[in-house]
Length: 195
Picture: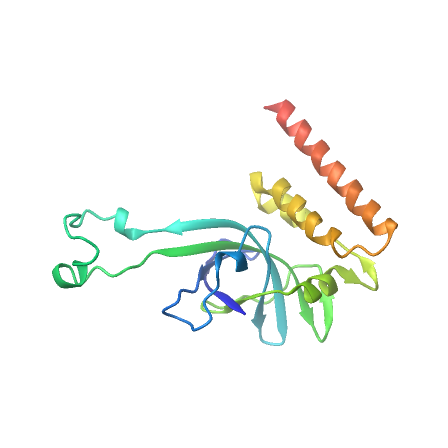
C-alpha cells in the first residue's frame, strides 16, 4: 500500500514524505498505516530501500499567512478562490537498509531517492525477513537510530523491540531483545542523570 510520496531530504539518511490524501488515491492511508516506528520501503530502481517513520509534522500554511480570516471555510471557494487546502501530514523517514536481488542488507544504500518516489507500507512478513539475515536476528541499523533521531531514539528503539518480540521464535532471540531493552533503559537513565 502506498502511504506517501518523498518531497525532500535532510541528508542521505533522513527523508521527508507527504502522506497521501483521499483526493489523490482511492486507497488513502489511515493514521494506523503511518505511525511512529512503522517500517516503510521505497522502490528505487533495482533496490527496495527500507526505512522507519520516526517523526511527524503537521503542516498548515493557512495559519502562516496574513490573508483573510473572515471568510468561512464553506465560502472560501467563492471569496478566496486562490486559497486552496494545502494542509499536509509530513513524515520523517530514517533509512535503515535495502533489499537487492532478494537479499537484505542493514547498511546505507548508495542510491539517492528521487523526489516523488512512492513510500510503501511494509507488512509483517517482510519486516521479519528484513531482520532475520542468515536465520539470525540482526539489528545492524541501531547505531544510525542513535546518531540520527535525537530525543526520539530511545522510544523508537523500544517500539522496534516491541515489534520484533512478536517474531521471536526462541528464548535466545527473546534474551537478545531483552538485553537490548535493558541497555537502552540504562542509557536513558544516565541521560536523565546528566540533565
